[in-house]
Amino acid sequence: MATVSLKHICKIYPNAEDTKKKKKKKGEEPEHNHHNLQVTAEGVLAVQDFNLEIADKEFIVLVGPSGCGKSTTLRMVAGLEEITSGDLLIDGKRMNDVAPKDRDIAMVFQNYALYPHMTVYENMAFSLKLKKAPKDEIDKKVRQAAEILEITEYLDRKPKALSGGQRQRVAIGRAIVRNPKVFLMDEPLSNLDAKLRNQMRAEIIKLRQRIDTTFIYVTHDQTEAMTLGDRIVIMKDGVIQQIGTPQQVFDSPANLFVAGFIGVPQMNMFDGKLEKKDGKYYVELGDAKVELSEDKQKRLTANGIDSQDVTVGVRPEHIEVHEEKGATIHGTVDVSEMMGSAVHLHLRALGRDTIIIVPTIDLSGEQRANFAAGKDVEFTFEGNCVHVFDPKSGRNLEF
Image 1: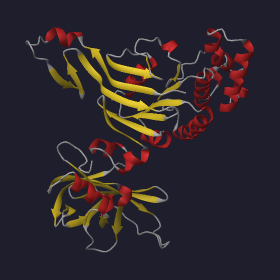
Image 2 (image 1 turned 135 degrees about the horizontal axis):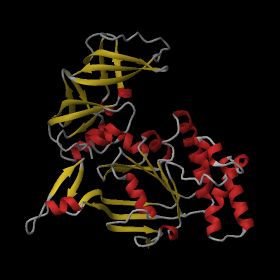
Image 3 (image 1 turned 90 degrees about the vertical axis):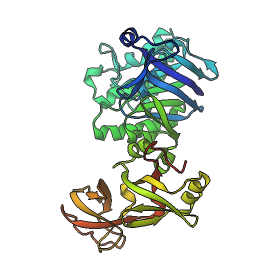
Image 4 (image 1 turned 135 degrees about the vertical axis):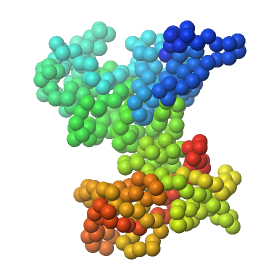
């Protein structure tokens, strides 16, 4: 168990060719963007000014698209990547120059990294044998970890005789026996099928409750992030976009990227206007005009926001479809996806592709009408479900 502190962490991968080709003038630093990551004369900025305080026994999830720097950050904590600048502290002790084996951390990799010629027992015991721990202590720790993970019956098998989920449990067990201060997990479920991923998510939640240590977990899967994390760190192009609880980042996205990344299906975005009239804020979409909720009114007023063009965000589950004409916003169904308890309607509305989630049975218990392709629908939403973003910066105007 430990606190982890990352202060102004940066990672630059040197780009020798660019440095040779581009001679900078005195006092000038060449800078451009390549694959959305910033490139300077020193090289590619894979992680930029990363700041995060992780409490003892907290479960932190780093999430973002491929190439956003989340795994690089994890590997810097593990000591597998050198930190270009900034400070990494575990329990208040600076770890930048401490060897990985001396950091008292354990890491679970995406590809399990098990020794194929060793049994499950031998794989789990290996790190303890290197430390020359007593045999009875090794046996006790291995069997305790195997019991927690329900793999006792596989201790005499080799990895090739195990399923993907069983191999992942062995990899986790190998880390547990070390009783580390910090548990690092790098996309541990990405090689599993959807059903097994769901089961293993539940197992990790149970595991966390039983071993009670500090976790840093990396994934590109927002469902994993939302279900596992005490807090989520959302990254893009090496930069932190938002840090918060799963509910906070879902309810109050800091910018357009977070709004689009968190939530399945993703948030609908429309070109609209924010109007301030008689001290009240409204959003206008086409012919529709929706008054914002009281809490949103207060935040926009506190930020001194004036009437302006905005990007309006509304989640698919917060849109209400009306059968009758003359509601507020008109759309035409392109595709109707039956998902069992709900229908996902893909519409063309206000010049944008729009998704609406419609329950198959309404509140009165009546079956919903069939929404076939080409059908015209009317829809609206409440003022407490609207998010307003600056179209240029992408910033949520409430925060």
